[in-house]
Image (cartoon, rainbow, N blue to C red; front, side):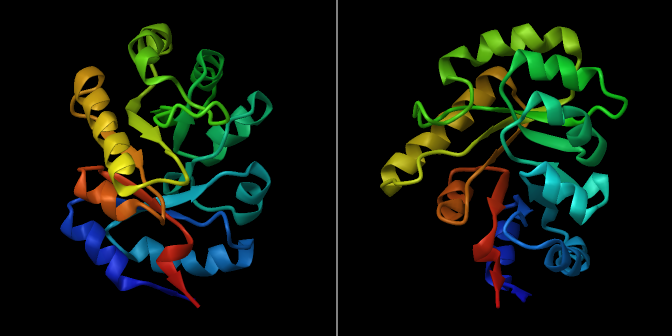
Length: 204
């Protein structure tokens, strides 16, 4: 298994960073990939979404970010094993994270596609949410989103541009974590700083 160098170059030329999504790989495969990914300056960290796999893979905390839906019962383990959480969208979870011994930095997840089945905060409610979690003194690194899975390029550009506008309005100077293997090139064109690429990043 090898990294596709063209993807790394595209991210580098855009001045962005890459979150390598390794959730599709076994613990053995992920441990083999880690030294290679860790060597690449453009790779920010590895992204995982299941606590059981995170426990098995045992990646160094500073190089592991959580990108999945958060369950209250998993918060202590997420905080113990992941340095950054990209999917915070609950005041209750914000409070629980703030109570951990190792408190991760967070991205506020936005439901940018406004799909009922998607988790995340309604874009119109971001300001209120930030006010509600202010008392927990979390390190907020920015906002995040996974938009519509089926899309036209113009729809995807609209999503990314709205994210940029939200960030500039409510969290100026912070970052945006968004994009997938299917739309990361559009994300880079629209100024997204952290793109998440999984299977497209690797060739067998």
